[in-house]
Image (cartoon, rainbow, N blue to C red; front, side, top):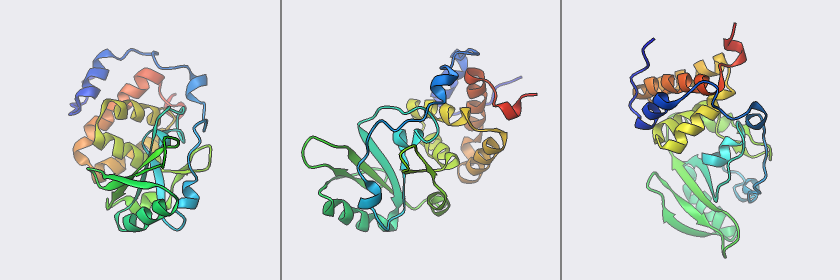
Amino acid sequence: MSQPQVKNPYIRIALRRARAGTGSSPVFLNRRTAVQQLPNLREILAGIRWALIGAMALRAYAPERMTQDVDILIHAHDEPAARSAFITAGYAIGGTLAIGGFTALPVGEAGYSIDVVASDAPWLDEALDHPSFDPAGFPALPRPFLALMKLQAGRAQDVADITRLLRAAGRDERALIRTVIARYAPDLVEDYDALVTLTDLEFGAPEDSRG
């Protein structure tokens, strides 16, 4: 069977090199932890809808990955209120993010810097209204929209993260993810299909796809 024609070079390399059964053990992959203690963003951003993205969001779906940064997503119209909320909480406002938003920096060396991504994506309201939650109870971007963001970012780590997101997604959820990508980034559907192939090669097909 021919492989999908993908645009992302990292996916092409991974498909060439992947071998069946080379993924991490299921015991590790099924772990969900919240070892990294985040600041109380629910209190800081009271009244503002937000969700984790990036490495921290992944721990709602896959093993926790250590990071020095916290990335969150808010609506663009909430950016002024979010800036004020972080200043009130004792943060300094750093540079402006190239993709929209800003960085909130803790005073002193202790604590996490917070990249606050401000977006007006057409799917944002739906995503923020229906978050998933990590083991510490923080809202994380729903799996379909997190996969969409990571596919659009297209970095090597994002490609690896998507396979972790897909590993625990059943057939119906994978179909939903594909629908979201087809609607909002149709040029990336073949890349998504290739990542499904890669995920199943590395980790095995999900239970509801076997038979």
